[in-house]
Amino acid sequence: MSTSDRQSYHHGDLRAAVLRSALHLLDTDGADALSLRAVARHAGVSANAPYRHYRDKEALLAALATHGFTELKARFEAAADDPDAPDDPAASRPADLASALAPLARTTVRYALDHPGLFHLMFGHPCVSHADVSAASDAAQAAVTARIAAFAPPEHREPLKLGVWALVHGLSLLLLDGRLGDPTPQQIDTLVDTVTRTVIGADWLAGNAAPGEES
Image (cartoon, rainbow, N blue to C red):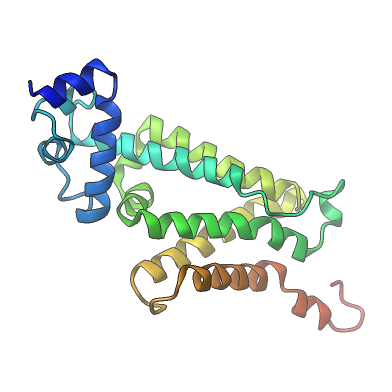
């Protein structure tokens, strides 16, 4: 065991050091190229050290995805620049819902661009069926569901959740693939806000409703 290995293990930092190195390599090289040996080399520990906490590559990938969903949930909860929920969700305007969900949409897209390898892992790898990953994913989705529930009546909540998921996932992939050019972070935030408010808020559509139609 190397000196750095002994020090990390002694101080209880080995798991965190391995996870940090794995996150870096995941975003750099992708899940297919990731190996416990490469992670150990990057972390500066012995080749066997990661096995103290992760029995194999699949266990490490599951831990990475779990970490991602846990971190995303925390960022959702910190996205507080939204309006207060109405007393009656049925009385909420589309614009209020859009204002409430835009920060969550921005948060998701930012996370995808900051952690492209992790984002692809979280939403496209078989490890998402792992119990810990499923629990962390459910918790992150629950944060979004709770926000939607505060602004939308029950019959609209599930379709809205699916719609928001499709919206932010699609925008994230388009940006990651370079299909929308090379916008600055500010331009990305503006884009996400505009798309979210147009698709969900649609105030201009409400204003153009035909006489006698509900707006």
